[in-house]
Structure formats: C-alpha cells, structure tokens
Image (cartoon, rainbow, N blue to C red; front, side):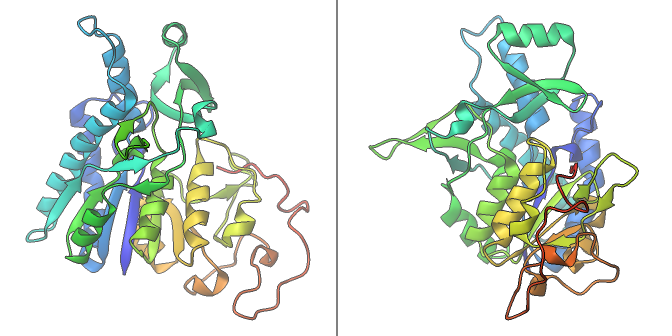
Length: 341
C-alpha cells in the first residue's frame, strides 16, 4: 500500500513546550517507531507541519537589529523544511537500517489572487501574551485567537500543484522513503515568463498532503494529530468520535478554521477522488491503516470492515455502487451544527 502520512506540528513542539532543538528532536525520536512500522510494511511518503518553527524564525528575524529587513515567510519556510527534514531522515535512518531515505525541498504553486491573502487564517509561532500581541500589531502582523490564546495568523492559499512532483514520484517508485512538502511546501507563484517567485504565506500542510497524495496515486492519506479523530460536540460531555463518514456530507459539519477544519477539508478532497483518508493519533497509526481507529473518510464501500457502530447516522453515507441511500437530510438535532474539532 502506498501511504502519505502528514505529521502534525505537535509531533515536534507540544503546546506550552519551549521551542529548543533538544525538545523537538526528543519528541520526534518518540514519533519515529510508529513511522518506521509504516515504512517497513508499506511505501511511505512523509510530510510535516512547521507552524511553530516558521513563526519562531519569523519573530527572531523581525527582532534582529542587524538586518535591513526581516526574512520573508517563503524563505523561512524553506529553512524549516531543511531543518525538520534533516531531523526526520536522521532519526528514521536509525530505525530503518538499509532503507534509502531523502528529504526533498519542495515548492508549492499557489494563486497570487487567492482570497487567503486578504483573509489570513493560518496560525504560526508561539502563544502571545499582551506585550507580544502589541509588538506584533506594530509590525503589521495579524493576530487571531487559537482557542483561549492568541497567535500570529498568516495567509494560507490553496495549493495548486507541486513543482518537484516528477522527482518525488521517481523516488517513491524506486522504493525510497521520501520526506516532502514540509510545512505545505514553499509557496510560489509562476510569472508570465514561467519564472517562480516566493510569496508571504504558509500553505496548510494537510491541504498540500492531499494534493501530493492524489498526484502520487496513494492508497491512503493519514493525517496524524494529537486527538483521536473528528468529534461532534467537541469539548462537551456529549463529545462523540465520528468513526467513518462520506466526504461530501462530512463537509456539512461546522468546523473551526485553523484547527480540525483544514484536516477534514484535506481528507475529503483526497477521498472524493476515490482514495481513503484517516484522521487520528500517531500512536494509532497502524490501526488507522487497518481502518479500526480514528475517523475514516471514504465512500462507504472503501472503508475496511471494523467493529463498533458508526457515530454519525447512516444517512451520512450516500449511495455507493448501487446501494440505496437512506432517506433524510443531515440537519436534525443529532448532527445539526455540532461543535467539531
């Protein structure tokens, strides 16, 4: 099976932790055994988040008095790809002796007219106290609420394509474990003369992962995060795990931008093309592949048989392969506008 696994930024820096290199490498080392098990049994492509890291570098650059101007986000994104890609390949090499591994610096094409440049939603960097918020505003940065805390938000345009796709495809076909499109890839636009130019943005890594997975004809897109999957009424005593759902109707749920929303959008985008996506924790990666954990997103007939009832009503499954669709809509008390993470 060909799997594209997107590793959440929390795999390196958990909320409240210092961004020291030793902390990040220690956390990554703890994640490697689960990733190595996937690579031992399947073709594996890895991508990763970079929100905390790129935000940290941006703040350091902005406060460096020796610079004429801060480094732009596209360049900082490339720095984080190299750094995290190096850590991943180094740690995986110890767990996969004899396997070929490589990190590919990846550029992601975006549209210069994407509305995201006018409506930033992507959280980057650390939590901000009142003084840090005031400093960010003075620099012209946008700030938003990430739960109970404030963080910098930047444009996150939709990925249109992967510049290095032919190279990545050849590597995967040759059996190499590839780390690519870290942090969503370096955002670039193509000029009329064909040249590429970086833009001030951070592409959502899950959205890029879905594009890359489809282009590589992956069988499964794994979106690995710090929660067990998609929940209805998240954060309440009535929270329930959505065990499986059709991509079109899962989009009907109310999802927070910048949190679980982008993951569900990415999973639905991939599954709508005929693949299977799963959202869950890294520790449950093997069970996610088997279809027995997390939230499984696909046409009903594409999801492996699994024990236990589905959390969503059966009408969240449309008719597939000649099946009769259950009557009824999705806007009743059981699923109307739930709180979802």
